[in-house]
Image 1 (cartoon, rainbow, N blue to C red):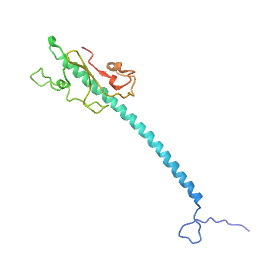
Image 2 (image 1 turned 60 degrees about the horizontal axis):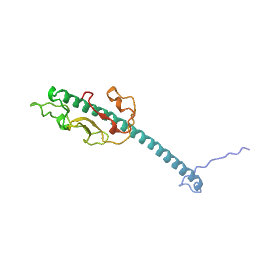
Image 3 (image 1 turned 90 degrees about the vertical axis):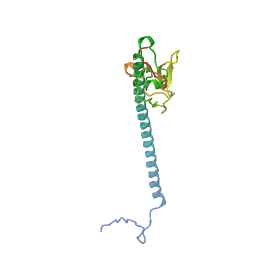
Image 4 (image 1 turned 90 degrees about the horizontal axis):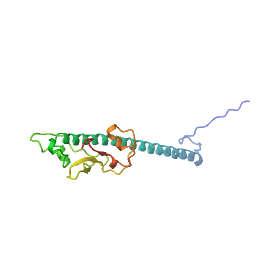
Length: 171
């Protein structure tokens, strides 16, 4: 004589079938909570990675824009007659040089500071109000601390973006 065991699947529409007890449903609820917690941790990690990537991108943009200002200041100085060599008195002189009758531009626009989003820059001024260099007004700590290009070697180990001063090499 053999004994057959049948497993009965319970559907709500079947008569005489008992639904699962509350204890069995509790395991499903705990599993769902664990899944939500794991997804939250994954999203937090992805958000941190995204934030770091955006900050690195802004740093690269700051280095590019600062290089444009450095080059424009150097060109402005180089295009001044020898006797009256000077740097610009304001950043707008880099957009349209007032010393020449024709149009002479060293920058196409006053770039926004990628770190603050503003077109306001910190200025390194000389005794006569000339602008020798620019720097970001951001007090945030940079991610990049080393491996700068030759013109930017002075930025190594700086504690904040406002310490990154973009100045021409010749004064």
